Image 1 (cartoon, rainbow, N blue to C red):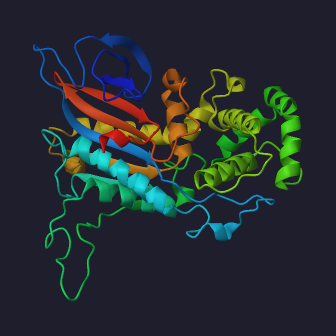
Image 2 (image 1 turned 135 degrees about the vertical axis):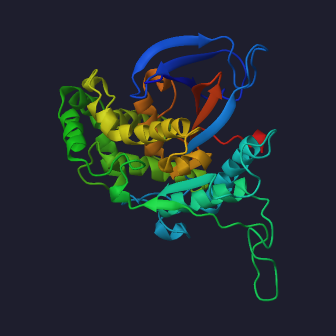
Image 3 (image 1 turned 120 degrees about the horizontal axis):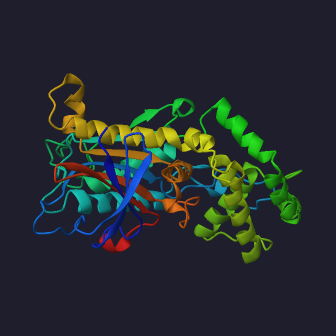
Length: 387
């Protein structure tokens, strides 16, 4: 099986220069490491052909939303959030529109353009989890990507009979019911994954964490109104609620000090490691990592491989892959975290457990000297200066 060279890049993905690379087989097993002194996406040696972009698979987190829950003692009740609990806000729509505008600049308004200026269904496929905020986020991204719709072709002309929004092109967003979505939902029902996660919670390592933070847990139980508060998903709910309320300039409780927030963040990060399978307790055993993030990683690799294999094939099963250029997945912070954990230790020094609104992970498939190369880029922020 032919090796595919993976270029792992973070916020510097738009910069030129030396790239550290890791070569993987189609089974995603590391086979060798190398430094590319002659290859750069932005600059190449005169003796070499320019790399040709063939396919992009990109995952983004939804935009700003209301909190996922309201804790018992929260003075700000559900009525504060006009769109509802967990729903995309107007700010979130703006954020993901900016993501779409960045993708427009990167893949459409460039020389030469990678994607057509106007939407073509054979070039673009958009998928979302079956959740309102991710579906509407996908719509916002697409509105930013395709602002050049042609009246009478891409959308109806204005007339006395219809007041169609100028320039808006409806583009399909595909979904899979959340409980069956093993690709974009890392916590879909999986008995084996739950068993492994519970084994971690019963370990001495996890018990030591609880002992270390028992005063904090008792304090949170008292101030939040949660009875018998333990280290579980309620910690995420509380921290999420307070972070969202601060973002929307709501008054925070006096007990939520800087030190309390830092301790909660540390504790949540430790809990996430047990959920995703990369806590020290698991050692070199990667079973839970594969169960949480393996499906999405395998799905990405499969599409990259099929795109490459179908470039010069007339087989019927290659019809879709020959034309597709851009695959977008609108998902969640845990989707991105599970994927980054599955990618391995290359991302350990980054905040992989807290992807921000509009964070993206992109996989770009290039052809270079008749060989496939993949550039992986993780952006954990919105790039305002590119807009």
